[in-house]
Image (tube, rainbow, N blue to C red; front, side):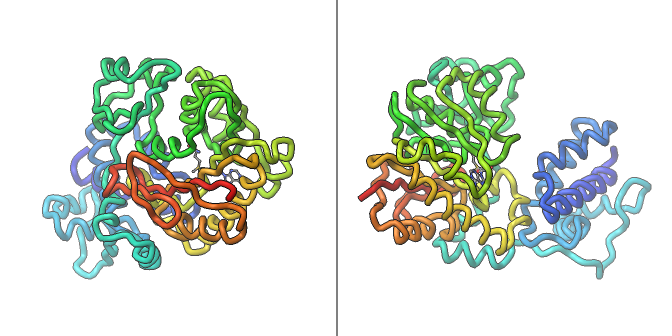
Length: 393
Ligand SMILES: C[S@@+](CC[C@H](N)C(=O)[O-])C[C@H]1O[C@@H](n2cnc3c(N)ncnc32)[C@H](O)[C@@H]1O
């Protein structure tokens, strides 16, 4: 493919990402996968160039661009080499007209930037939300130890996290390697830190209420040295179904998946009401803390979607309160930096439940924020998280 054809392909890919974001469709990575599967003629260098240009465009434009062409034309205004590819050749984009629309650059739609500012995020925090994310792994101590994995994969061990390694972004994820046989899991340092907040110990009973594919379930199982019981629940069947094979690979035998119907969580967990030592609520959220990985997620979020997710979080916290034993704790986590989902959510829970209080947290990274702690890409080199630990007063 010549440079002009690559530019047109990047425009087509960004259009597909915009369409998916607007219609609540697949994430950008999935869209890109399908896009290239349908274009086998694109070689690996073509794919890399197209992907880089498309993702640069997604990162650069906060408000949803009117079109991908408007986004890439705006980039071409400051990049002569890119502008030269708008040459009207058979597979290339049409020449740029002086008066054609340009997309608006920026971090995010204005309402979201306002919400970040009132959540006490400064310019450096905001800029770091869209940097490229590193590739982090958690070594599964049920299977191996960190030195053995370092010897095999290389990478930088985290000084403050016993099982964490940061790999070079371009690290080959070998099909037969430690990531495929359960000796390690891809997991951001932030996810590893918030899992530590649970403070689980062997032989107890944990409920991972929003377990998804089980990333944190497996981290909690390792804390429990593989002994005790973890009930891993979720309302999303495809996600939850990934847990069993992952647990088998990881040598985790104590995780028991249970699919829930939305709105009926408490009824479907009545057999374990009041019994859990630890309830993890890794709640569904806007995901503003993971934009480094899914920059197009900010095109999906609307005030309405945010309100809906905030209502679900509040409901799940109430469900969690009914599941804990009298001495049990709730660990509430969101991968978002908006106070409506973090600090505000915990304040609201504590006013609904005056018999509960926030417990102190001792985590290797993060700063106190309201009655919990916050981790940010800028300060902690992690995805963005809010975490709080709650117990009965
Ligand atoms: C942040 S993700 C969890 C990620 C997972 N804990 C991990 O570490 O990989 C939030 C999860 O909440 C689930 N969820 C949404 N509504 C729910 C509900 N009413 N009850 C339980 N889980 C729910 C979603 O399906 C999603 O898997």
